[in-house]
Length: 224
Image (tube, rainbow, N blue to C red; front, side, top):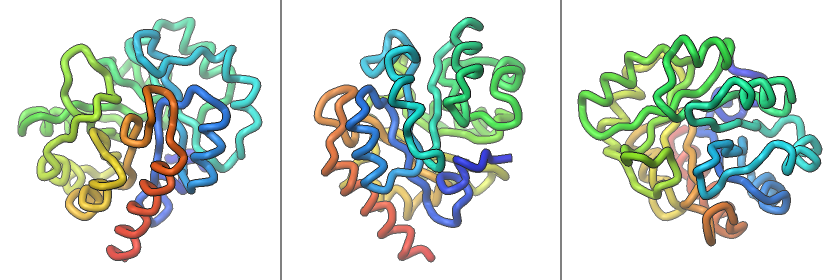
């Protein structure tokens, strides 16, 4: 089910690391050098980290083939989805805007990621009821779709992970100084961050990405 290029992120026998919101080629290479498994690119025009495919395609296609590439969309129109899927640059779509399961399956195929906001037991149950093949748990922030820097209730996230028979990615306010504890408490298949390793929206900090990966790997080793 998991595409080959995403296996080391979601199915590699250790906690995978994905960093989202890349806007610059040099940051993507710094992330790869730091040991990040997957990169996320935001195609939501209202995001502070929004990119256009035409702008990033020249360097996107030169990235190593074993690094996962995920296209993040929020209530996308069909023209954007056709552009993204026909480009073949991405290994998965990540839906963030309350799209229906039918819509996600139509465009995402056998494997896609669905972001679910977690704030209470009801929202955790709703996440588990979503049939997406991969769930991403994020903070609930009205009108904002990820990248808020707000942490979620890790005990609720742990309940979802333990009950879900599929990969679950933990997001929401993860930073180098808290991600190891998050992994210890939640045991997700992977973790995801954007603002936690940035110097400003869309501009990644190479040192923070290295610290983030080191923190995750250290916790993964202790769990083994």
